[in-house]
Length: 274
Ligand SMILES: C[S@@+](CC[C@H](N)C(=O)[O-])C[C@H]1O[C@@H](n2cnc3c(N)ncnc32)[C@H](O)[C@@H]1O
Image (cartoon, rainbow, N blue to C red; front, side, top):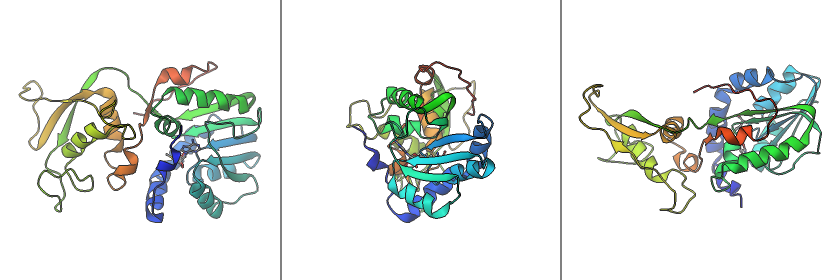
């Protein structure tokens, strides 16, 4: 059962912050995406967020009809208020369900949204594959399905050297308050919270090892070294700067597994950014 309502950001200020963060890299997202698109027909921008990406694509290609779909009514309302073009529309819908007519879309874009589908469906990575299969039915013949998201780096461990001395002034000693604690304290907190929608102790959090006395690669003063699964290191690094909205961000598992994305077949192009 999807728990999408837990994504509510709360206050208007928190919505503004979230959407501003998403939009910081929107030019890059649109540039990457536009290169794979035909410039006419129907395009569905799944989980469009602010709507600025849908708007940019609709402006760039006047012969494209762009529809932004978002599960959150607040997003849809904000996008409608802010962006208006004859070839642009916004609707509320769950992108994991059939929300558009079969065979109706020349292109379907999933930018930073499939990991929401997995996270809010019990961290089930297969849910992304199922959502893509549903979306494939909504594609027109020779349509293009684009996924832009974070990939799981795969097995193995890495070392993370994190500062222990960068807590802000208002932090109490040994604080784990995400707004002011040190980065090392934040990591240790995250290690107990990862996949926060699960009840502890079942598959919530992860283990790590503090590496002491390693001489081949000396540790800088004011840092602590952790040995941790590559996946968990990436999950932490991707969210360590979202301190003000930590409680909402910690609900999400950001990375997706490659097998899920390949399961549909067809032509797959993977561009790595990490
Ligand atoms: C991280 S934002 C991405 C926004 C935009 N696509 C971008 O790349 O900046 C994820 C958006 O997907 C929406 N979302 C999450 N789950 C969804 C679902 N199942 N169906 C539709 N939208 C969803 C959220 O409300 C949010 O606006």
